[in-house]
Amino acid sequence: SAAFAVQTAIAVAAGSLLSLLPHAWVALGVTLLFAVGAVVLWRSAAESSDGMDEEATALGSSRDREWPAWRIALASFGITFLAEWGDLSQLATAGLAARYDDPQSVFVGALAALLLIASLAVFVGAKLVARLPIRLVRRSAAVLFAAFAVLAASEAVTAFGG
Image 1: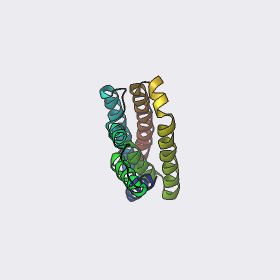
Image 2: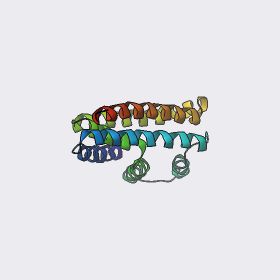
Image 3: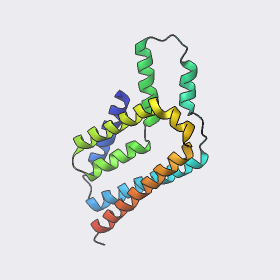
């Protein structure tokens, strides 16, 4: 969760800097971020397999090692921090921070969502993957990101005076 907090803080800071730009340009940028996210998710669904991620496989193979708790925590932080760097949730958080002039609320909401999703992934993920193909999950997320892109585009058109 510390890695998520650092990632979220970075995204909120970047988004807050973006909020200094004119609203129309920020709305256009948010549109592009969500559109790129939709494309990335759609393409990753086509390339995905229903197996575990490489990171999960690597972690599973190292589980038998005798590591002290601090080293396990540090490894978990590093892996999570690097895996989440520049991912869609971080980009979406930056977009939300740019769109709304309330960085604390964006931080709290984004961090809460990341912690909830991570908890669900840990406790329920294996059962869901056994029942729902990862391709379906990613395609559904792509459609959701595309819908957000359309909403942001509508706001951008309005902001540009269209």
